Amino acid sequence: MKKIPKLTLIGAGPGDPDLITLKAVKALAAADVVLYDALVNTELLSHAPQAEKIFVGKRKGAHRFSQEEINKLIVDKALGQGHVVRLKGGDPNVFGRGAEETEYAENFGISTQVIPGITSAIAVPAGQGIPVTRRKVAESFWVVTGTTSSGKLSGDVRLAAQSSATVIILMGISKLPEIVSAYRECGKQNLPVAVIQNGTTEGEKAGYGTIDTIEEVVRKEGLTSPAVIVTGEVVKYASVLAGYYDEEFLEDEFLFQNLNLLPFLGR
Image 1: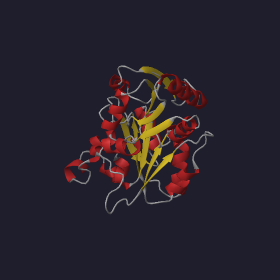
Image 2: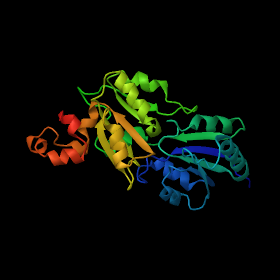
Image 3: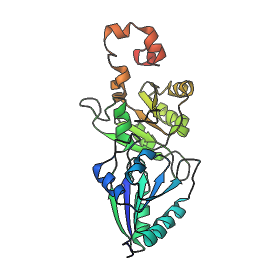
Image 4: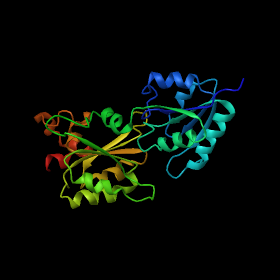
């Protein structure tokens, strides 16, 4: 009996394989085909032992398939094999082009479902102890893409830089000089910044500084993509900065030099 074609779009979370929803695990167990991205932790594929698994790439500079090819592959596999799970890092509708894929499939009469994922915009800062909002510190947060489809810095970064909100910039490490420039134009040279690479995974690395120092921090620490950039006063509450206001910590000049924290102390 031919199976009914179906597409389930799943958010795989920020990288830690435990940060996936129970509903997503159940959908993987029922999949006939799994199309997964480069940012997906491959441990999650064990939840679909019976399914055909196809790596489709989609990391900057290393696209195994174009978006158009992925769309066509979804339709071909759904019509030919039944239930296709599209497994995407983070949440599929946070800069994941999820809506494009579901709309394309629906044009061919394929039923679709979206299972949200934990977005790296919130989970990665949280993994470092950074709350994206905090009472009396940050009343809101922006999530902005650093790089638009045309390869340019998003104009929203300049708007966000003018606000008092926490700003989380995804896919922005290659645009860091432009981001820094946008904040400097707003007179925010001393605003705390964190850059977190491979957040929630065993390979997680982070660098801390200010708008004026973060480029040097990133260079010194060798931070690259995939990375999440966080700007705002909430960065001061990161776990690595715990005790920042305690006198015994303030006396440890060596500690702060090595954590790139001297700019916070005005030294």
